Image (cartoon, rainbow, N blue to C red):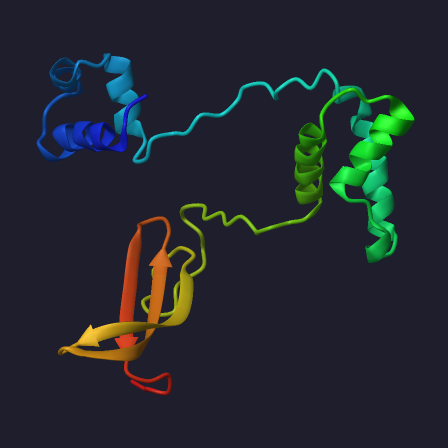
Amino acid sequence: MFGVDNYAAVRRFVFTEGHSRREAARVFGLSRGTVLKMCRFSLAPGYTRKVPAAKPKLGALLPVIDTILEGDRTGQVKQRHTAKRIFERLRDEHAFAGGCTVVKDCVRTRRARGRENCVPLAHPPGSPCACAWGGLPGHGQVDFGEAVAIIGGVRQKIHFFCTDLPQSDACFVKAYPRETTEL
């Protein structure tokens, strides 16, 4: 596996310094396919499993766990099963021979699957909407916030406005002394 430093060095060598990918492969001692992958992605792609890990002991009892968790959704909060209690039920009622940690990990992932943590944003290029400040096509993201900054040697709180256009990676940030500042 290559570190972030090597990854960045290869990309800098090819894109900034203008060398060919073949030359980068020779200089860094990598295969041309590896250099091609490094040039395609701005960040190193992480490892992903092609097939989910097998669960030989727990696999047959996954429907039982799902049934228990489904029953907990409609029951009272104080009466819901903990992961340890689910493990005890599997051990006592279904002769489960596995460990508690395996059940806890499974329950954690199954509970998280039922909740939606965030809404994924999709920004297709060429969208018909226009941004408020210049009529540029595309969706934008806007946020307001506050931060502490040192201006002229004085530490003070500032309020800022920032916007981002995902397709072009264009961003705009402006700081104000107060929330009520008008242009």
